[in-house]
Length: 324
Image (tube, rainbow, N blue to C red; front, side, top):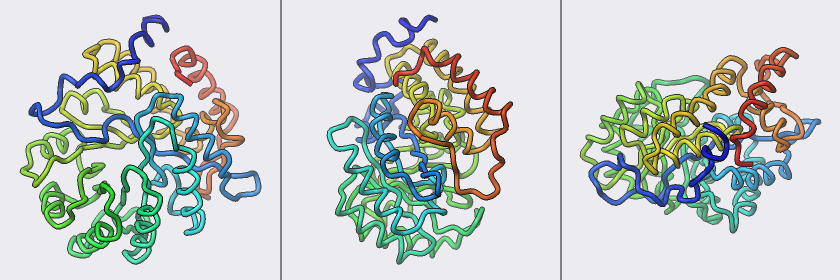
């Protein structure tokens, strides 16, 4: 498929109801591809807020449906409280008048701090908030009564729609129970267990109100996720145009073209799985969004010359199919 055919007709976007919309009921307000924004840094180390705002404007040009910050790909655990506050303010301000919906992360290592972030988000008025469970390192087993209290307190602090990011031992049954106790809980970003099976389980669950189902995992099973009735996905930001194109084409019933677009995104997905977050940041650098490709992870393997060349080859190959 050539570039003209690839991009033709995408103006319809998500206005066309997907063929796979479950049950024919009302669709969630937030749907589509919502990249996790990466965090740019100045050469000396501080957060580069000017480039963070530029990333928002860049993502608007990609045709993505929403933006999310800060989450794991944003290195939220390596940002100070003050950096997260200023970053959230920067993003909400930069997004005013643009198309993407805005979701602000409010997770923290304890409920008290998460409530502070949630109250700040309540004043900023993004479209929604999202919270991981309070987590230490790679923790995947949680004290579920404590987790329930954590989300109840976040829900009381902010009346915006809430995403729970489900990981570890957060079951479908737990999410349904939590929805009954937290009226604002309307969405899940599910990364607990097998992605595709969980979509089916969540779709079949008897929830007290409609639940928007998003996924993560670099959107590597996006085609199958859409076929099962997912409402969205949250990949990294660097090549999100290809995934937004995939979503829009699938929504228009153009499944073969959607698979073609998706295959191009997978070039980068396999590379970031090998090279880490620094590879995703390098692609944003290649695209003129970030001045460098720094991360704050001391264990991140630096990109050597061969790694950079590999990413550059992929970028040159997909460049004709990018929107921005």
